[in-house]
Image (cartoon, chains in turn green, cyan):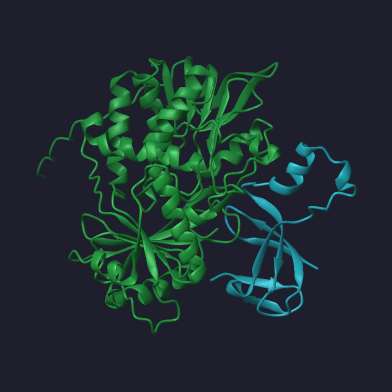
Length: 404
Length: 83
């Protein structure tokens, strides 16, 4: 038998968990890894463990449609998403690792007069926040993305779109690996196959986590578990305004480059880009029921494909290669919750719902600040758990651009 | 597509139904007396278990009646349906 080639070099160490850490991050997805990286890099906190119940970046980080943009409506959202986009623009150099970040622009289509009004308002709000945004009419949509059907004869004709040229896509796995490699090199322990099964809280302060690989003492626990946050919070006795839903996406087989940008449509509902390799990547709205199954119902895909075909008749003969679902944690106002909790030493990063990937660098930066200094970064200060009591909601259902 | 057993119409395709979220959430008896936190709990907070969950469903493309079901949110299997 021919000898196998040597295994390529590993990107990160694979250590045994130690008995204690200054900070334990629960969840080894994009957000957890980015938080670990910025804890070490920006805050000088290197005695950190990232605990992952499966393998690194195997949850939503492996299941999203990799769209990156910052064209959100409200000032609070614009600030944190734009902070994130600026970090994306330098991330490849920062991590010394290729992430295939491609600023190919995003079109958010408008199909009704109300869509048009909302979109123009959002463009104006974006501009006031220094975010590149323009309103383009149907003809300009066709110039930017020639395969979009702008015929007025369809049920929901394209009336125009918002356009953010700096938006784009990146290779999700490489982003996670880049952060993991850099965090590991700075001393962060990345521990896979290690599920957190409980917490020890003493007089209102967390002192340890219990895991499938033993007890780990720590004074600070940072939750970055996306769709499973409610499961962890229940073990802390902490009710959260979250509902976990399946969110489906799919890819076609590899095709010639036909789709030069990213197109999202709220009204007919699909969002599409073409990955570097050539697959068409298409996302759906959430499945309506609560679900932790990482799969959804086929009629959702059917609706998504009918939308895709109305917008892109050229896709008619493309074959579906794979479909899957992630578990997204949705809040009532479609904005995240990032900050402290009523339990000292427990910090929340959740509720990113359908749009967490784009926030990876930005929230990692801000969450690391919050955890290290026990006070929120100005960019995540508005995204408290208390806003559901005070009423200071940040309603981004429009700009979230995924139906839920 | 999953079949859901409507208690009045029998098994029908999932696409005929509308999801209503957690069952058994009662409107507060004296809403004016609630403090903000309790009101927030009523308005915004719902259980989100991984496992059996008591839910409301409506057969929106059929008899248009609401009913209760217990469904496992991990396997998606409907465990019980009741009027």
